[in-house]
Image 1 (cartoon, rainbow, N blue to C red):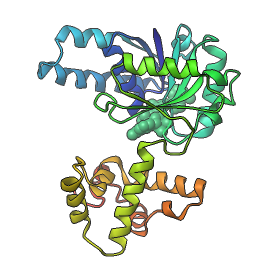
Image 2 (image 1 turned 90 degrees about the vertical axis):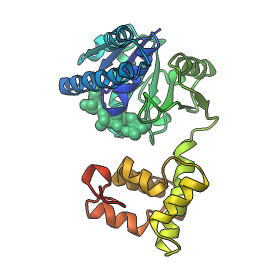
Image 3 (image 1 turned 120 degrees about the vertical axis):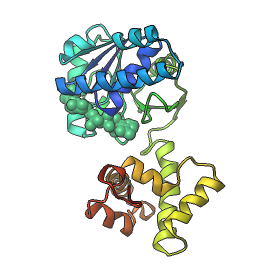
Image 4 (image 1 turned 90 degrees about the horizontal axis):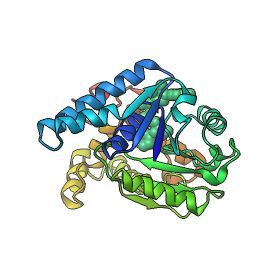
Length: 281
Ligand SMILES: NC(=O)c1ccc[n+]([C@@H]2O[C@H](COP(=O)([O-])OP(=O)(O)OC[C@H]3O[C@@H](n4cnc5c(N)ncnc54)[C@H](O)[C@@H]3O)[C@@H](O)[C@H]2O)c1
């Protein structure tokens, strides 16, 4: 099995490393050499911590790092791959252009998967001549820790392609779930959005403080973080844009972003990364 991962940002770098930790040969491509350098350094730091904790040996870490071959040349990255996972910017036109190019450059029987959180595969598969070999394979951040992959076939995806994606997820030591229908938000974000929207409604209605809502969810449902703390961790702009996307695509009032969330984003209070969001850091 040879894997190519396209885009070496927060997701691509770790998808590649997770595969390499499980003996899969990977090429990691990015158009930006600086991003490849950052990906190598960040993966090196992650694996060094595992060595310190005695979870892997120094030799295993070195081998897994070397197994991720980095390149800025797309043809070089996908030339010998049986499976390609695209993890470039979340932008429909960038991804469609990438899928058209991957279709030209990858082997005719290679699977083309997208890690997109919001773009259903039908919109990307139509840029290729191989819709039966295209699907969404949605990993979770940080991939080296989060043990789930949502596998989402489009209307044209073959059963064999789904089987190949399930097999790859398992080979990477990640647990796959397979959706039977393409749906915005897949399973996890769908349920997370519903719960978070309810938390925002309670806050907007003055039912409880955000601290108490977080505490209730953490102690009562055993979530590691309540919705407000989680929002600050992921970035309130990310949370806000995901809601706006769902609201615009479904027209469903349930997804309308909360006024307090919108105010935070407009004020540039985006969570941990800006030093303040729902909480101060
Ligand atoms: N960050 C998350 O929590 C998360 C979780 C699940 C899925 N996703 C999805 O993963 C994808 C990537 O997200 P990310 O957070 O890693 O983004 P990111 O901005 O960290 O990384 C994107 C990378 O793609 C590269 N890139 C852009 N255009 C390219 C091109 N034409 N050729 C090669 N490389 C190109 C950029 O240089 C950058 O390194 C998105 O589709 C996103 O929806 C993100």
